[in-house]
Length: 341
Ligand SMILES: Nc1nc2c(ncn2[C@@H]2O[C@H](COP(=O)(O)OP(=O)(O)OP(=O)(O)O)[C@@H](O)[C@H]2O)c(=O)[nH]1
Image (tube, rainbow, N blue to C red; front, side, top):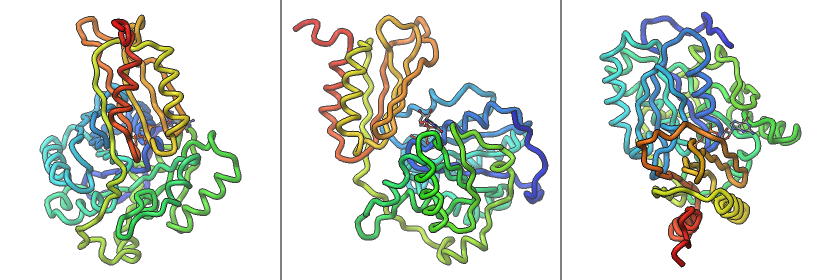
């Protein structure tokens, strides 16, 4: 357990805000759960933004007493910025209930517009202080995303997220060899030379290194990017999309394993991220699966309530997603599928 103690952060009465960013599947929710469950004495309000047609993260964030706000209807860095300002405003009316705000962005967000919010809106700037942008980096997968060639004018989110980081949590070091990890570190330094890199497994970092650290430095950002406060346009890579599936019924375990295993083996280069909460036939507990490219993990989740409909929710995020094929493939995994045939 980690006790957060006094740091160098300025004590000017404003509420510190941590922005948690990092590419799809890098470990943001894992770190968020760690922050929400460790005993650090801080009361933290969380704002969560998720990319994908169907929100899954609400069920993956552990029950905690903290206030959790979700923003699922767009990307925090563009369409829902107004929502972000409104939520922050609403939070500040309950100022006495928390000591710190944490914003988890989507894996495809550019952190710059989120950071801008704390300088461009006078009311927010008077009450809130951007403490640090923490970027999670997936040691096993980040290189392929850094190397992606994007069309002219379209930003590479993985690069932007590293460029704006005040701290890097180099996560999933168990999935990469030392040579790869050293290469990732060199690439990170080439993008953001002064950044401090914290190596981690399962986002296990000393929270004193990332919370209330007073690391965001507007002068440094303006030196690297003089138009930081005035830039309003940025272009997303619109070839990355999501397919959400919501279907009632119970899933046959072995059909599911065969289908998902084959899908990620054959399409895992294009399917950056997959996750879902499923009802497995014969089990009283939810089944949570998480995929990052070809790597797939599954575990039991919460107990289904007796009155709760057995509703499966899945989301796939990536390129060239074939909605019909995904919907049909999953429907065939239902225990009742093909029974009438
Ligand atoms: N092997 C390994 N798995 C990890 C590690 N950290 C997280 N994971 C797993 O990786 C998967 C994705 O982690 P999340 O914390 O959900 O990632 P995220 O960044 O919130 O994902 P998005 O919200 O989709 O962008 C989950 O199955 C985690 O349990 C790690 O250090 N090693």
